[in-house]
Length: 598
Image (cartoon, rainbow, N blue to C red; front, side):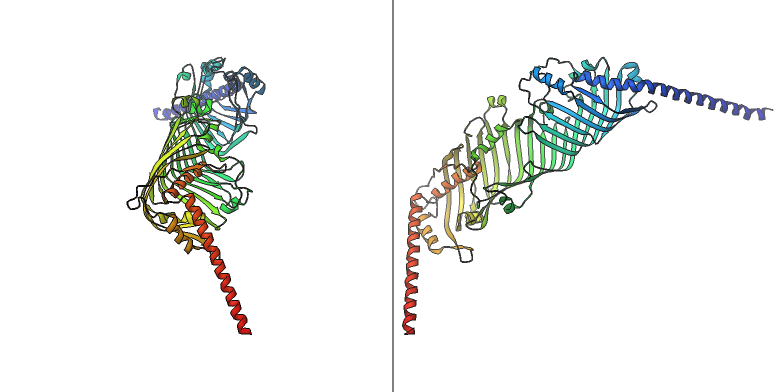
């Protein structure tokens, strides 16, 4: 009897367990349906009212549908639009309370995980594990508010604005993938638009509660905002260049912007680029393997458009400039583009304690139509630091000078150490530069001097060069001492096939009458040059620096205006004598031929 009763008892227990489980599932399903029905409008109202309250009615949110799974705590929202109320914005602008950045956002679908609806219903706390947003379109409109108040009329924290609807808003992670981002700067006559496609953004640990506004480590109530782009390429407004970025990463928590592979790439080659213009136009080509902006103040960047950073590091770069002299010079005054004058014109405030340059190559090349050749001066292994780079008025009250301490190898050989001091407030762009150039062969400069000056050195050793020069937009002057020995030059001319060759007699006259082959020369005292150069309107900042040094070099080797004029007269006289001799020789040949024919 007991043996047959035992399986029957087990069967009844299993039956009751199944029934109870079915009832529980049925009750849960009914509860889920009921809560979903109540939860959907509750969540909708919570989101819409919280945003309206938090933005002081500046923004509204619309969406076509919201789906909630009460059992999993997941939800999806379709066709979302964050819409700025322009009427409210105009009123805020008039009162000086308007933010300078206005946002517009479109989202096809938004996914929320682990929303915890019971917490919202019972405690008015919205706790979301993560939100994923795919392919959003985010527009940021910047408008300069002329009468902006330093302290807004309504300075309530985000929590104080939403506490009627929610006591706490917490989001563990917010993901935005393949973002189409546009920044529209409306402070110009024609708005300037900067666009980024395929940007990924992650916002970590968003918290709005009674204490979160006191946490100074948060920006937009988040612990960290991370943005990332890959293989970015965008044409400049004039369509002459592409801006390319291989990879960029920015983190508000790390306070860092890191760029790998930043490039300004011209669309056309050097001569094709020059052919696009009626006048001389510089062509730039720039690349840095790494750009790091450290200790970047994101609150200043977002709130005040102020780029404030402790250190910028530019590493493994190439900077090439080319210009063709085949076209007439520009009509504009290039003095306005001195580096420190251009910095002053920026619409963004810049405060960079230190800019560090590492292992960069710089080259400047010109095409000379007279020689049909290109001359290039280049600097290898450029490195150094620039201190106090700023256009901020408060910082300029403390210090008006930016100092650049740089080292490089001129033409890859002579070591150049230079200190450039920029007066950041002088209306005429005052600056000074002082430095030394170490030993190198003069022959190293032939790739520059032959095509551009039709001049080459046969021999000569530079022992040292010291210079100390001051200047502004009008010109520059100072002192220069060059020690050298065994200098001999060759003046070039074109042959019948337009190739450059040595002009023998002029080179002889130049070495005999014009150039001193050493400094100091024998028992003579050391010659000290006092160069002075008045800048023509089409000369750039670096052109002025070079031309002033060049004037000093000419004086140092003994070339003066009187000697140049005297040499020119002798050369012209020699050419005239040569022409007369050739003419007499041709006449003699002709007479001999006529006598033979008789």
